[in-house]
Amino acid sequence: MNNRTRSRRLRDNEKIRNLVRETSVNTSSLIYPIFIQEGKNIKEEIPSMEGQYRYSLDQLPFRLEELAIKGVQNIMLFGIPDHKDEIGSGAFHEEGIIQKTLLQSKETHPELFYIADLCMCEYTSHGHCGILKNGKVDNDTTLEYLEKIAVSQAEAGADMIAPSDMMDFRIGRIRDELDKRGFQNLPIMAYSAKYASSFYDPFRAAADSAPACGNRKSYQMDFHNRKEAIKEILQDISEGADIIMVKPALSYLDIIREAANEIHVPLAAYSVSGEYAMIKGASGAGYIDEDRIVAETTISIFRAGADILLTYYAEKIIDLIHKGWI
Ligand code: PBG
Image (tube, rainbow, N blue to C red; front, side):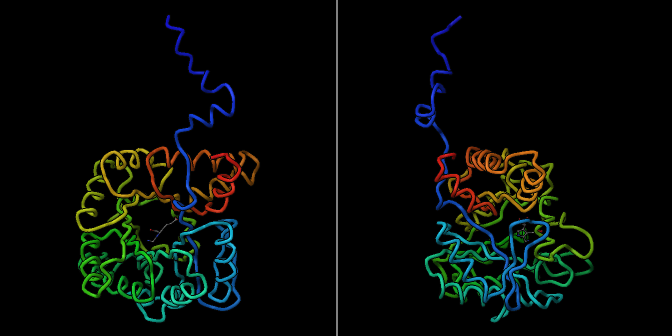
């Protein structure tokens, strides 16, 4: 027996454990998603996502101030409009909720980096991520609307556009349209491997965006598939995506690792509402320790190969970084 290679030597005390730590997290790699809704004086807790709120525009600056002081640097914006219709016109209206949010926030908190989620499901009366034709989401008609939304978000001042609709060819079409309008330098973060997942349910309750009929399986990916994720990612890169994303995160660590091995652009992972809600629920019941579980799950996502993490736990993760836990 070879007893010269004792693994426990490097685990003997905290100093040496810190010395050989392989994975760490930077505050600058975190993106915090936030929900903005029409109205006044609203700060309403989202029942399915304890500790997360919907804000009206007049309340938003106070929240952004808090986040900036905490050290959060990147914000993903989700809008909840007053009015929904068949074509999701609130998504590209000059005075749409996201457009107003961008204009205001670039003014009040220009130090933050604003990413606009580009999708139609919060804006359509039927709750699907595109335009319906004969009861199905029509890919090529939807592309025309995605172009419009991208341009309106760019004009309102978005720092990055993040298409989450999963239509084919959207990245190329949005890239061309942005370039044509003079936004050559506006980056695109593509939700490339976005699975049709039950982990989004708390978000859909928050954003009131559940499909009125059917589901999203004809455009979001089947969770039985792995190779297909790499195909989607490579296609988005070839169409001009600057950053690609895998979503959800925790049940898809294998996909994150495979993507990290395969590609040479920054890789983001979205730890979605259901992942947050499960930790909240179980820690609220006293079954697990919230801080320790957040530390461990966060590290697992970066260890799998993510460079960037979208998370409702951004503030807690910053606390954990300061405590030296991660
Ligand atoms: C919009 C969108 C969704 C999420 C992000 N962008 C919902 C969906 O696809 O149904 C989910 C985010 C989360 O669950 O935290 N299409």
